[in-house]
Length: 228
Picture 1 (cartoon, helix red, strand yellow):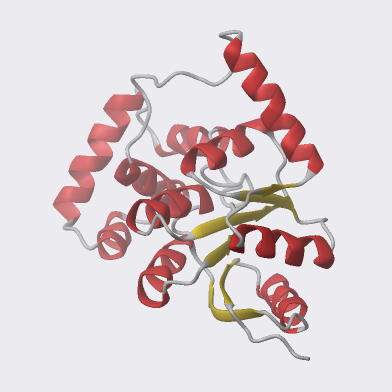
Picture 2 (picture 1 turned 180 degrees about the vertical axis):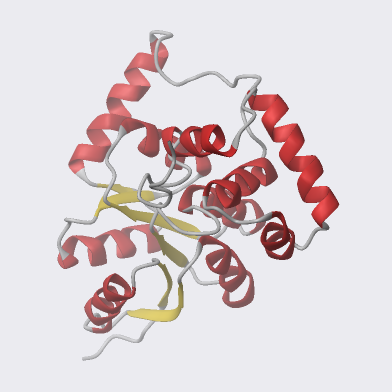
């Protein structure tokens, strides 16, 4: 008997060939339906608002708005949505930030299709799902935090959601006019936010902001390879 499709999925991945592979994989599952695909983090937020998928399968390295910030925005607006991170990154920094943002699962891209489908079903049932390597990192991070040496405390330099968006767009090489259009604000407001961001971080050039964005996992180093 063929199962009725009941788990609605939004795929958020900027590489077309990866999206196509994921779609083919999920289409073999009788109880999973892909309702849309997003090529940028911003598009993922917009499509979630429009379609309200039960689960968003999200890559971290997304253009315009990275997967971490997109996850924050989605879960703030639609807390019933479940986010499953599918990433090539296993760094403790990424894992820690994504879990803090509210993601319910984290898989590495080398995971099998069988494991991915299982993770989706686990989230559908209200559970969490992390690959063993990620679960181990979370456990170690938790143990360290109990000893007072783990999870970083909120600092004076922690960025707001809007500041993170702006930083990513600057680091991706967007001009003020493009940023204004993307964020639907005026160019003057962009300039004001940019100045405030530089003062807050005590970084006063684009190259420095870009390096900061790369170090913080906001963009990948491959996004901006011309920084001196």
